[in-house]
Image (cartoon, rainbow, N blue to C red; front, side, top):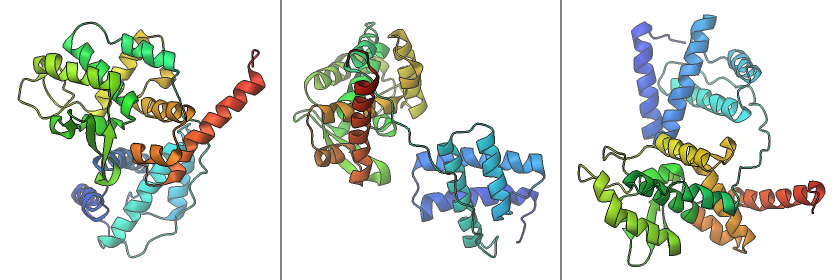
Length: 300
């Protein structure tokens, strides 16, 4: 293996980022996650005296096992392993490594049921936004759209005014892989969005922004900000902290639609899943929750 000099490591990592974006077509979220994971690998290598470009299988296995032993979630350990696999492929592609090592299998992922809110909890968190301020109206519009359309947090951040077909109650969203899909927004969701755009969003828009959801300074909201909004409003509504992240609203949207009789194929299209297997987890989740209720609830 040819080892770049100390200053070259940074340039190698920059080329890795370009590789993820241009050659692999990874989303910004994936690039950001891999960059965060790379810092964990670099810190481990610095502490252990290991060359971060030495991608031997035994070294990676020890690293992953150490991360698991420190209590890191199995899904996080899996992602670390996936990042290192991609990095090893890149080093071969970039001519830094002469071979692609056979990496150790990743730890098995434990099946975990997604968190879901009750209809009452959804209403409580919506009510917690009603403080009469532009920010409160924005927060309600975000929560109504997340629950009413089942959108991912990253999709919500990137909704532009021109993506809304107000006349027909249709929203054009770009999901994973930059795939566009149409999502209906009707009823209460539509009324809340229209009120926010007409009366409250102008009070936040200081720069003529194109984004639907704006910060107090009139800037585009980021995914992390949506998590902060969920946590703030959820705690005000006395909802358990485990349920306070934006993706829970997507899980809740899907579960409630299935319970009310929507078929899986239609739900798959609305959620933007490329595989029906991903959508089926909501059916399994609903069935398992009902089984638990039947087995353990004293009034079942």
